[in-house]
Amino acid sequence: MNKFINTFDDAHIFRMTDDTGMFQHARFSIPDLHKGYTTDDNARALIMAVMLYEKLPKPAYLALIYRYLSFVVYAQNEAGKFRNFMTYDRQFVEKEGSDDCFGRCIWALGYTQASAVMPIGIKEACIGAINRAWPNILTLTWLRGQAYTLIGLSLVNGTANDQLICELADSLLDQFEHNASGDWQWFENDLTYDNAVMPWALFMAYSRLKQDRLLRVARKSLSFLNQVSFRDGFFRAVGCNGWLVRGSEPAQYDEQPLEACTTALANLAAYEATGEEAMLELAQRSFSWYSGENSRGESLIDVETGGCYDGITPDGFNRNQGAESIVSYSVARLALVKCETAASRKRLSCYSH
Image 1 (cartoon, rainbow, N blue to C red):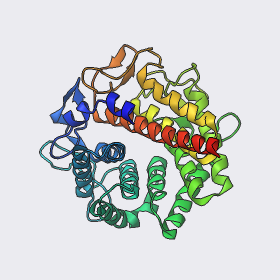
Image 2 (tube, rainbow, N blue to C red):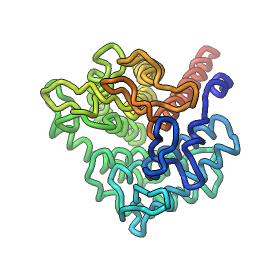
Image 3 (cartoon, one colour):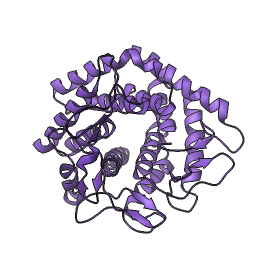
Image 4 (tube, rainbow, N blue to C red):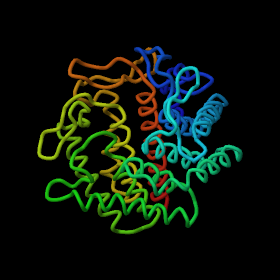
């Protein structure tokens, strides 16, 4: 724990946060007020803040939790969905956001209410927001929104949640069966953004429901994604400038920090579900993308600011340091530390017996 606390720089997190929430973008290391805020970013920042507080219960981290959770709760509309884009003068620009935004909010609310160190008022606010969102869950049509929602629900107790988890998982399985064949073991006919969330969700569903069919597809799809992502001997996300269309070569640029995070989280979920050390190693290699095991051979972490660059382009780093980048880096790092600590304790317990 001490090693982590001594080496983790949280300055950019606080720099990117005002009394409303976390800003969406930055110009280099300076918050870009013109771009305002998103609920997407504040939901993920909420998870990051909870993880920080679990690691070190500083009042400043608890204050972040209240701030980000307030943003997410305020973003929820009367129908229980979540608005996403907010201008700097605190005006939402749409009546409801995307399925992805909805799913990330449920993930954040589920993770926060499940944390053993959260005050009861925070837990109750999370459950209240989840209950208001409940009627909309089975109306989700986009796979990533369904997957994030599944992950969030897997952290909430209750047999009613089990039924929803099963239905969401069935939707993912249906898409896999429809599109997968031969050497293409995937849910869609292309690999685009935030890919790892789908196998990750199925590992979470398996951990909850213990259905072998979930584990089978989770394994196949994550193995396929890992083969694509580690094709050069290190983690290299499919680039957002062209993606990977079935039957073609993957785009090399731009590589996004989000992909290293969710790939690490998916492999951690696989490790926790199966106990296979190889999955923990792949999670560690995914995270090492941030520190220099990447196509540039350089760290994306700015040692002066504590921020994370926004990606790798054909011309080098995108040196802006936005919310998604610093949150992705922080969540991946905190999740790995948590998992590695638990694994070490388990090994010590085995040795002592």
